Length: 197
Ligand SMILES: [Cu+2]
Image 1 (tube, rainbow, N blue to C red):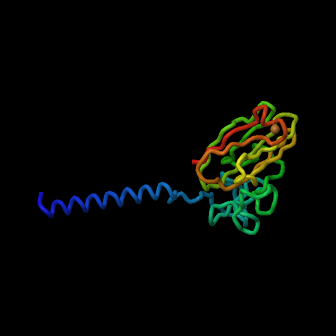
Image 2: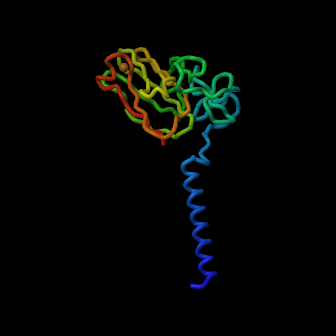
């Protein structure tokens, strides 16, 4: 093998290593996976909710999804925070009582009763806006909450028969368990898991 062939091989190897590094970096950083938000004229209904001046609103009372950044924001336009006390101004806001039929088609709809959550598992995309609804299908009050303190702000409380929703920014990839935090309810099986991909 002469010197120029050796040089060529080295160049090929260097180029291959750089290409692999770029691909790995792109996959790990989620490059190209900007939050997706449906665009439309004010008043128009999309699969994520109704377009308003503040963004797309899934149900009256929920935090809007900004049509410019695709992030769930406060009424002042700042990204909501997932790790604050539920109901505070920085937190994603839960909706007023609604009906499951009135919610946009992209909503992840959970039922809860003394026999548990149904479904008890759902999958979302990291960084994307998620609307989740909870319906109490029995004659009890239930409170949806995550176990992880980093998602403390995402909570939904429902009275017997009631449906409410919340729109939040999905966290980083991983598995996040949830439960009903009314005393005794998690212990009898009101638990589940959110998978973030
Ligand atoms: Cu419960």
